[in-house]
Image (cartoon, rainbow, N blue to C red; front, top):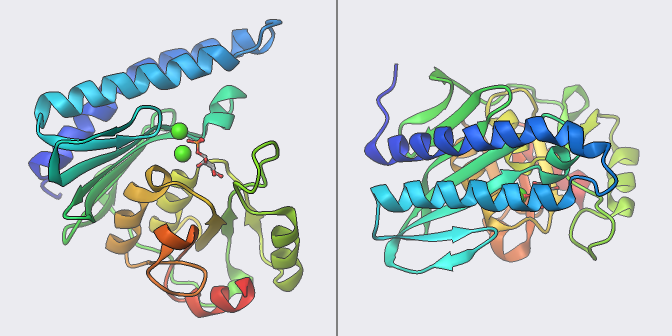
Length: 261
Ligand code: IPD
Ligand code: CA
Ligand code: CA
């Protein structure tokens, strides 16, 4: 049984509180699917509500920390500590009533992510990692998988998402990848959970383009603390600048880089 640091406890508390609203709102979606107006506005409002609760809780506990959150952007305070928040990662799933989305919070200290939480409120799965303290799913230690050959693996990716230009993996890139390797590819719709699934060995790798920092902040520490690798498509550390991210169990890293070339 691990001992959470005070900052991890702050994140857990904020997640638990916000997830009550999230679960309640998700229950409403089914009714709205069949209404003429659809659930679009409701989901936007829910996203903002969840974000507000998270930020209020985080600020209450740590009034001096800065925040970067998807909907409201930056709140600049203390320069050394910053929360990175995605209130709902997997909004398209949420909107369609598909129970696969998560709250994601990372904590940066001097520009390095030192702890992170990815919480799937529907499955009640809480993925937590802290620098030097390992990665956990509901208090059980998790590790990346040990598969060494890409052909035996399960790989996750994002997109393609039409309607927003060049936001994600292009259809050409997806086809190129799948024609090169015969490997099951999953597009589950939440980058945060994709990373959590690699950290817990459910999937072996994840690659995508054009993600934002709040999509991956908590995932980065989960992967590092579970024994995986996070790089860009070229195996370098520049996944933020280059806007390409490759996450693996470490063993298939070189093979993935070759295939993505
Ligand atoms: C999205 C999800 C999705 C990924 C998109 C992200 P959102 O985040 O992580 O899996 O493919 O690129 O924008 O919009 O649901 O917070
Ligand atoms: Ca989001
Ligand atoms: Ca997101």
